[in-house]
Length: 457
Ligand SMILES: NC(=O)C1=CN([C@@H]2O[C@H](COP(=O)(O)OP(=O)(O)OC[C@H]3O[C@@H](n4cnc5c(N)ncnc54)[C@H](O)[C@@H]3O)[C@@H](O)[C@H]2O)C=CC1
Ligand SMILES: O=C(O)[C@H]1O[C@H](OP(=O)(O)OP(=O)(O)OC[C@H]2O[C@@H](n3ccc(=O)[nH]c3=O)[C@H](O)[C@@H]2O)[C@H](O)[C@@H](O)[C@@H]1O
Image 1 (cartoon, rainbow, N blue to C red):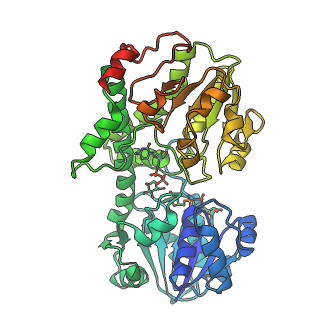
Image 2 (cartoon, helix red, strand yellow; image 1 turned 90 degrees about the horizontal axis):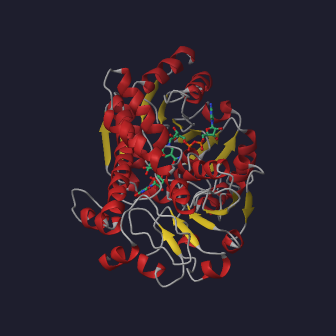
Image 3 (cartoon, rainbow, N blue to C red; image 1 turned 90 degrees about the vertical axis):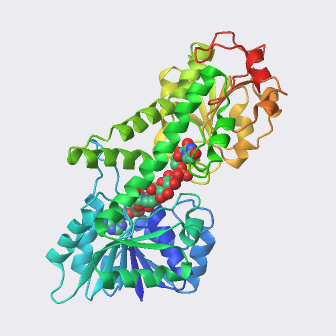
């Protein structure tokens, strides 16, 4: 069976390389010739742990090829995965231009019967439109079956998720097409759920919306914990022990970012609105997240008063660890707000700096290591819990910073460890630790003094 993949971004590339690793013959195509050239030479245009060696191995074995020519990719493909981007329109709806362009090109190029699977996240009804587009231009006498196969991988864990996902959804009205797709994934021994196309499309949005809801829920509880002197880490552990709640996605912090939760929650609000069902719960989830992404700078201002002229180190720029992706990262909001307050910003990220430079340009400085990032800084804001940041020794902050103040947006350190050092430390949903040399302005987010809170923990 020859498999083609449209789009060589995070999803397309991981899908293509992992299918080749399973032994399939795969050809990937993209409209970006620069990406295709990189991939042909064995280099991955995105950072994803494990992808580079697997790519090289399968290129050498001749199981995967890359081409900018869609004719070569689609002409004789038995199975095609569409994995192109579906970014957000200004009104929050999903932009389907790339998906429809890919469908059109597939229709023009296909020369045999084929199954066309959509991995891109698309609103309910899109696969029907994809099918119409293909049929409107396809060669006579061939059969093309559309299937919705939504993708659930996480960036930074993409390869693991491909081989060990919780489920594979196959949404189609064609039993024959479902069988073809099932045969491809059966060796992975991942539960396969066959359903209708519209339900498959909805499963993807509902999954992301539910996970985003868990995050905003725990962030709301964190905000209350700060005011009542409880500790969100203890609370999340306690509620997560209930199997019905589950411990995952209960990590309080400065909100969810990334290429999907923000856009997919907004798109689902639009999908609901289109059928006159205001999705009030999800609207609140989005609102809470917007507040959360702004909270680090709010806390900094409450603590320091003016940020004008202050040197602030932003530690972590990617939207989460183990990726170079900055799409909708909290760092974007934080850096913008710091600059608006007149602070001078120095950014550090172990992997995402090159992508960050494309966004921030010369408006901020960059450091290629954490130590120089915090050197002489008046404030450090932890945005991304990279291992390297999480495990950076606390004792180094007082030796490098003037008067060490950390706002930890990801609760990387235990309060007990922080208390051993002369550091003012503000985290999310936990007691604030004010070192005696720190600025004296009284933060409004809690009415307790530190001693009272410390004795509670
Ligand atoms: N990034 C992620 O972790 C996940 C993404 N998704 C969904 O998968 C889809 C793809 O996401 P990413 O891989 O992150 O996007 P991406 O933006 O990294 O990559 C998309 C690629 O498609 C290419 N492309 C655009 N139009 C094309 C066309 N007509 N033919 C061939 N290639 C074309 C682009 O040049 C780009 O390289 C989106 O719908 C996203 O919501 C779903 C699950 C996880
Ligand atoms: O549709 C998608 O693109 C993907 O979106 C998420 O994956 P991803 O965005 O790569 O990363 P996550 O690990 O889910 O984290 C997303 C954001 O939520 C934040 N988060 C996550 C978990 C948590 O407990 N708390 C929290 O704030 C992370 O810091 C990050 O900013 C989903 O987890 C995937 O299943 C889905 O396929």
